[in-house]
Length: 338
Image 1 (cartoon, rainbow, N blue to C red):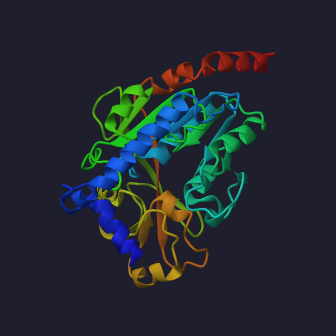
Image 2 (tube, helix red, strand yellow):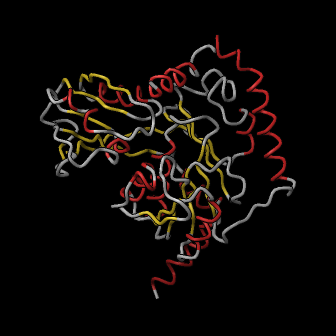
């Protein structure tokens, strides 16, 4: 019942507000609290801190569905490719863990959160979760890293940052344009004027547009991979998605020539075996974020669509420069050559 209600609210945010306008007084209250809170950090009324190494915050001003996690993974991989030692800090949304927790590829997503586990499995970075991101960042800095990437920490002002990267989606935009709870916005759109980089998934601007590239299909049970052009199944498949904007995933399957039977679940849903019991008649395709939450005892033919993000030309170089990492990277390579 709750899942259906949550999905209905999420859909309503991306349509004219109608009945949600009854919640306008709550939106005004939220807007006032948000503005006051940010001002309090800016003026030093609330304490903030910095871990001592460059911090890149990747976040958004709206709730979910902007491609933030693939951006984080893409940035981390790009920095690692430049021989930088990278850590990711995350709140560990949906996880039950307490305190500061280092995440490994075999951690339990129910403890550390699905996104943190996905990042640990998808990159060689150190991943640390804590509700207190500053504490997580200080822990990571003590591990000898060169740079910290904060996942979804745009509004976590207690953590000082050197660069802010905001993600959005060209199709869904900022929904109905209202702040929570009437719309999906966490902060007003004018907040974008103060960030360093704005990345728009599906955008056509060469300076901000990003795109997803499908890499392969990967069998969930044994890791077998098959090419995008010849997966050996289909065209009809069950498509399962517990992400903020599942239609993006379903459309990507159609672009690959598949005919998905759509199954939407609320974002971050913890899958149960019975979620898949009626889907055994066709192969199942899901996102990598869904895959980390599937029960080990799942007995269906399930596949993961592995994808990677394509950044605007020059973005990573600009990010490295803005973060102050260019000199660090050059110095490190010089040391390596000695």
